[in-house]
Length: 268
Ligand SMILES: NC(=O)C1=CN([C@@H]2O[C@H](COP(=O)(O)OP(=O)(O)OC[C@H]3O[C@@H](n4cnc5c(N)ncnc54)[C@H](OP(=O)(O)O)[C@@H]3O)[C@@H](O)[C@H]2O)C=CC1
Ligand SMILES: O=C(O)C1=N[C@H](C(=O)O)C[C@H](O)C1
Image 1 (cartoon, rainbow, N blue to C red):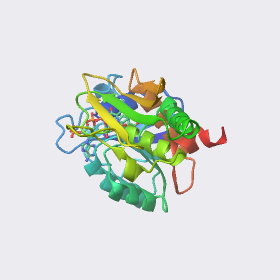
Image 2: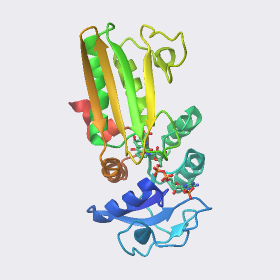
Image 3: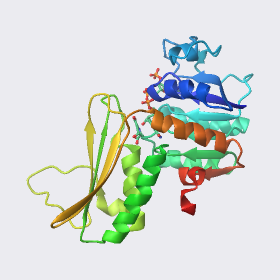
């Protein structure tokens, strides 16, 4: 049995992680951590997730006496340094799904990879990871006469913009083509003199209702257009991938890994 601790356990993702982990063979949730200010601290995480009592209280830190095999973090960027430090101290594999993180966090993840198995992915869905590969291939095959744009839509509660997934998608497209992420990717178009520049890739952001997330890459030239689109109809698409990654990571040695490693996409 792989024993999982979840940071952000009372959030939208955290509750579904708790719920689906109880259904997945070989996993058990042994700890759930949330922000210190959460009024639900002390309540049972199974009850909070709607799956009945698990005998695991929501806490505001990972208790030292709980035996853990792997940690999953879907919380907030401000919590990440502490989570990484705790996992390095206790030699625990760490799966990170939190987005809106900066270069300094990426450097911390790189460094932690020298000491523990660690993975960060902006999106744990199998289909989104396939979308990245397909969009890269399309950019490569279609060449420079195609205008590329990305559109993402998410629920009204999402704090970061654009989504981590949209940024990763743009990076895949740039890596596979003549585009340069820092030069070509822009996050808005606004004003009376903003004609599309050659090579420009704009990421457009919508925040609407309770949408769990969608991403579209557009490739258009005169007379025709290709759209590659992923729509999540439920957060479970991300949760299943994150739990799979946790099981996989708990068996690895120290290193920084990607969802391509977990899903073996590079072998295709
Ligand atoms: N990689 C992927 O596949 C996906 C990534 N995400 C990302 O995951 C993150 C969480 O998303 P979502 O669940 O919707 O957000 P929520 O706001 O619903 O959940 C975040 C949770 O983290 C808690 N939290 C705050 N501070 C801490 C702390 N110090 N330690 C532990 N927990 C803490 C919050 O508690 P409180 O509210 O009390 O502050 C809250 O319960 C976001 O960055 C989102 O973009 C989301 C979906 C998929
Ligand atoms: O906050 C969300 O909901 C999501 N966040 C991730 C992102 O920023 O890309 C992944 C997914 O799109 C849902």
